[in-house]
Length: 167
Length: 180
Image 1 (tube, rainbow over the protein chains, first blue to last red):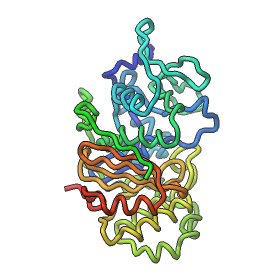
Image 2 (cartoon, chains in turn purple, blue):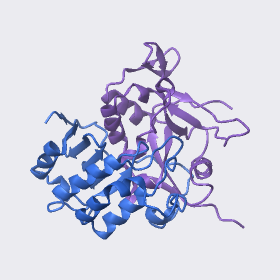
Image 3 (cartoon, rainbow over the protein chains, first blue to last red):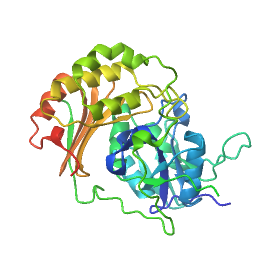
């Protein structure tokens, strides 16, 4: 299976936990903040790519991983264009390398790294997700900039997926 | 106040997200989020959480309305790990700062919506439209805020002594924003 291209108009999904769901199905700023990382050099914002899997399949994965297989699942969708715009607005050195058709950023160690990366979850002992990806450049954001970044992505309506009917 | 104010340009992305998935059916209107996930509402024990124990007197003084109080309780009982691996329960310092903030503004503010960040900090949001919204996240040390008021964004991290008068006196009256 080929990985996502992360083209500007492609969409990435983010699980919106109930603690980040606001009235009118709006996504709170907290939905785009990650847990404090153990190793900042490996930190990324966990998302899923709609290029690889459909929304229902992604919702099933979120339901299994975060909700013990129960309840409606809220998903926020954001284009790579919006993520890239927000990153640039927050001071991340993002640039497009035409030779490899990839967005790159200046990483913590000074080298160029992929701004978006495919992290498929395939281990047999873990929940599988072929579409799992990471927005890598968030590790360049300071505490203040993280809030700015999350603010630019929040406020949109999330999509809700109920549990499939059991026959 | 050491904040940053930025004028927005026409392509600053503050438009309604119109992305759609072809062929995907959107689910019907669900039950309210407060009731939507039984896992989130399961406390670890019958005892008060650390955040509530540390701030119970302040909670009483804050005179929270039923909706705001209910939302706060819903978030206060989320255990560590409840928002994913590595996430933290509501921090006592964050709750304390929010309650101090609410006590100082409740006379001029409508009740905000609350959210919990994975690092255990509480966030309050006032929303009128995507171009008019205010979020304040309480780190326990400073309040990290973002105010989008039509053509400008004011963002920063301030003490309550600086933030409260700024918001109370702001001409857009963000503390009174409510969805229509």
